[in-house]
Image (cartoon, rainbow, N blue to C red):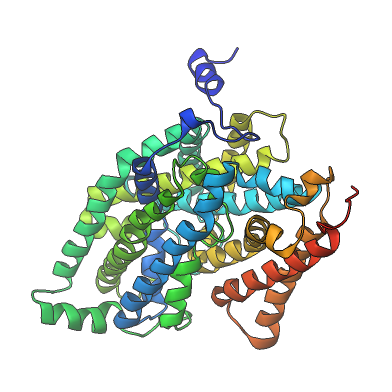
Length: 467
């Protein structure tokens, strides 16, 4: 028999998977400020900041690139995603089903859920690097793809179980957890920057500039790492969450917003997380490299612990947690679109299990920059489809939400946009050597163009449509 407490939790969970959010459930900016601050001042920051150091970006390129890239990201959320979310108030998955049909969306949801699982898995692994410190676990290195010890696997699975328990309780619990934890985490990142700079010998503004340029972000990549420029920083900061904004995944979150202006709330995440936290964690890694010359170990928990002690290790645990929570939640909703008759909490529990298994492999952390860019690229074309359907249907003369309005389970304009866009991006990469970080922008415009042309052919407003 099910535990009564657990049964009560899941019975009270209603995520409105196939209906608009009722007015009684709408939330103000405060809810989104806390959630975005918690999600983006999180576990990934303990990985991305050090990887920028490892890739040899210069100090000037880092700061200017982050200022520009994060501004573009905020505008993408606020001006592209949020207005559609506040107008439709539907999940990404159901909105896409109305446009593309169930058959197309099943494949999209499967890819989406797997990508979310891998991303959440990397965050569970980040938390595990801190949990394992008291047990002297052998930590992964920059070149590791496979788990090193049974102790690492056990630690990851335990962390995954606890995190999944929060995620199955739905958006309200995910949001509450982030609101409680994010202010403390932000303070820890500020403290990390101050303490780390002191350990590196910074005592004045002049020494800050020289140490930043010569010691931390000195423009020299570590052995085996490629060189990053300001363009890498701009496009990574803009598109590291490509799936969420121009890829429209955050329709699922922002559908709860009272006003589309809640999209600007993401500034609390990207400028505290993707600016302050990336810089702070880069400083921590510089301290770690100075104390461990020649080391290839890459364990965010140990990097934070060396500078901030127990507080740093606990911050890594919580930071991984606050990222994994909403990510597992999103993955659960993606799979729920494939299995609509299965309760969302059960799907989310299954997702948590898959995520925990994926987290056992350190490659998710070591290759996080490339994975995040690829993950966003794979999902981006369907965001462009939703954008084009919402804004251009009436202007360009085609029927909006074509699959629903023709009572069809399949829309070839949407599928064609997805497949041809990814083929275009692959061609740029293979034929012209364009790195994955730079493919999202041209790919988005290509997807919009293909969908508009194909929809005018399939769903013209001047003709009677047949399914």
